Length: 252
Image (cartoon, rainbow, N blue to C red; front, side, top):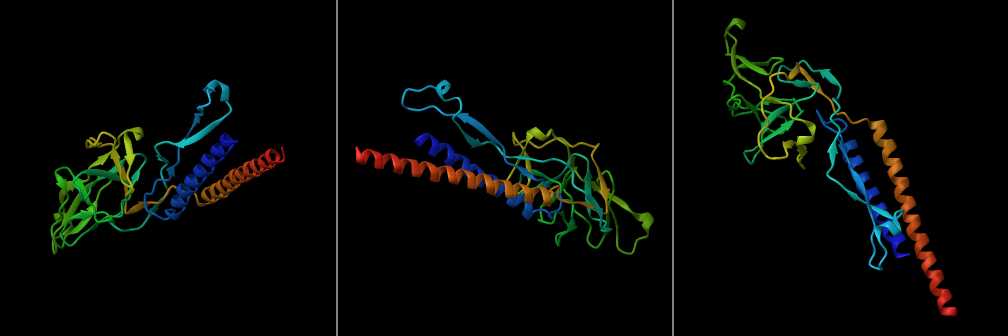
């Protein structure tokens, strides 16, 4: 009886965890460059303290969550007309500097120049170039090329006076070598900066949308709710069976 309760309890717990992941994905359906989170679970055979071995209970398992993964499928690209908007085409990431001074990676290409003349993301993280954070001359008209080249024209200068400032550092490490932080940024598992990849290209004056499917997320939420309901019914059944057994013992 205790085994049934424990198995149903872990099943209900994981259904709630899965529901939280889906809810987070659904909340970010409009977030630029968002990558859907995947909840990974693994079945673990149960062993008991009554002398029974794992082989005696091959049908009794419970589930544990593993390291969450991310769906790296590209999102839809839409044109904005903003010269500072870029959308990474295919695989690859934009390198940014986190507040703790480390390098991280994002797909969100809605960039702007802050009051300090730094090229930053919508979250005000500095974009990394070939020599560190990219600084833009005050008042300059900035454009970004498909290869990440950042160019500027000084105020009052003709278009022919355009000058290259820096080049955004794009990286394309293997998906399995990246971990996702609570801030939504990706980092290498070993903590070392990834090498720049000159083959990564961007669509200029465009943004990549979230790769979350609202319909699929809603279907998943309904399925998780049903799974949770089924597990709670098992708990109720186990409780009723235990009460019935106790009554029989009292009669005896």
